[in-house]
Length: 186
Image 1 (cartoon, helix red, strand yellow):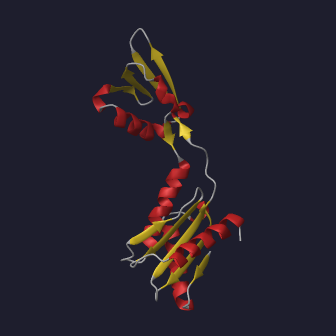
Image 2 (spheres, rainbow, N blue to C red):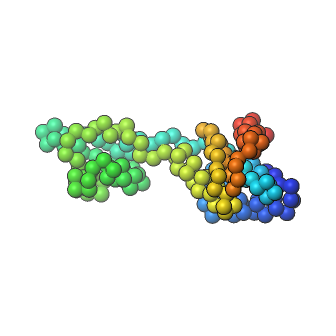
Image 3 (cartoon, rainbow, N blue to C red):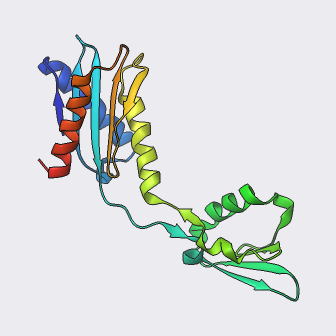
């Protein structure tokens, strides 16, 4: 972790704030490295966070079996991994009303019609979930009032430039410098 600031004490304070927020959100193990640039005189805050690799996307077919019974015109879903049941129900409730989904027991769901195409639907995306948690941390870290935000994020590096003024090119350059450093592992 590197926090750049002309004021050494200010850098230490922001490092403490960042560590505390990461601890509160249980993000420490999910982040490889971090770069921050703070300059209260300008005022600007640049933050670049490199995420660790996450597991792959979980699809319906990975955690449940879907079978269409032509005689009954019903798609039966048998949930193999109970941990994903809330996600499965959330996906189904976005597409169907709760009345359209019959749940005879904890692990079985039934929907009238052929919906076997659901097997390729994403049930859980660990990468997006981690990215969302990192954005949550960033918005807690940013100084209050810094409403002008430029998002320069890449696939594995979440990067923002924030200020309460117009964003300057030199700040964007600083963010790109941090992205390059994090990509090269410096």
